[in-house]
Length: 364
Image (cartoon, rainbow, N blue to C red; front, side):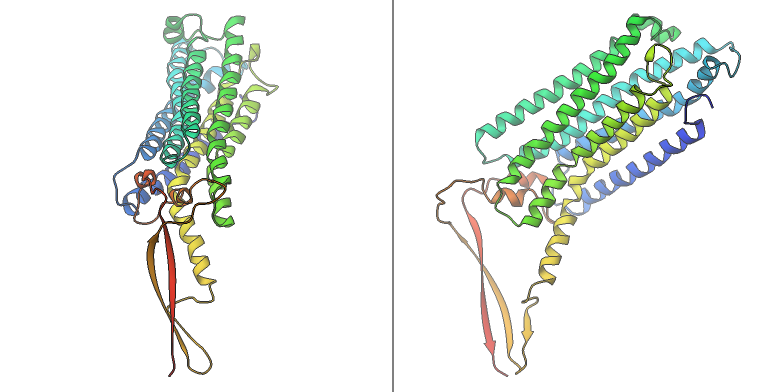
């Protein structure tokens, strides 16, 4: 077999499976956005859809890249003789690798942008320090994206020779820049993932809400940790394999495999906040079913009936001695069946909703 432990059919099958699973999640996100919300698409949705479009573009580039890669590697590993169109295949590979890498970095940044746009809505009415931290994280993500692009575009000594003749990664300097680009992009990707993940978890920590809901929200926003795990697996597999090609540069077949896996996970994680309404519905249904006063009436042994009538009054709560984050923020973290993420930004001030219940006993 030409490239280590992976074959061409296995690589193609894995990529197709990743595409199918990712598409299911994105379609589910689209259906949820159009059927469970009353407003138009939000910026957080558009970032996810843009990430998926870039994922498709990258996936097509890698699919077209697989065949010439295996042909050239077969020559390199002396499994076949050189053929007349090797130079054309090498140039085609470079023309496909470059846009695929640009789509890869931009895709990951779009997923981060989706989460950051959601967090921006949640910061309304909170202390200004949180908004300044949010702006700092946004700047960090943008600079990391630009740095990753720059490290990729400067690998080859001659862009013209790279795209027309496929000459790149042959000199010691180009090989060192290839390895540097791999680890630099990994480092800033993990750093930005941590920054994006820590902010909402810190906000959720001080919320006055049910422990189960708080844990659910922290798990939802902490899902970026999954992206960190797959990014680490990717860089370990393609950067530390003993059967790398000469000069220690990563082998393209493993690069294709782990890049598709990582981006699939990233897009799926980006879709997760759109399904928060289902999590909320599950938690609510469990609470209702477990309540001793479930329903509008409850019959006791002597025939007494307890009729539950609720009224809702708007009142202003007494000020607390220790200021904490507003309880309204806990409601903004969930998107119900008749709201949109745009409504998460609505400032509710200090008003709260207090529900009281009248119990009328009728003797039969």
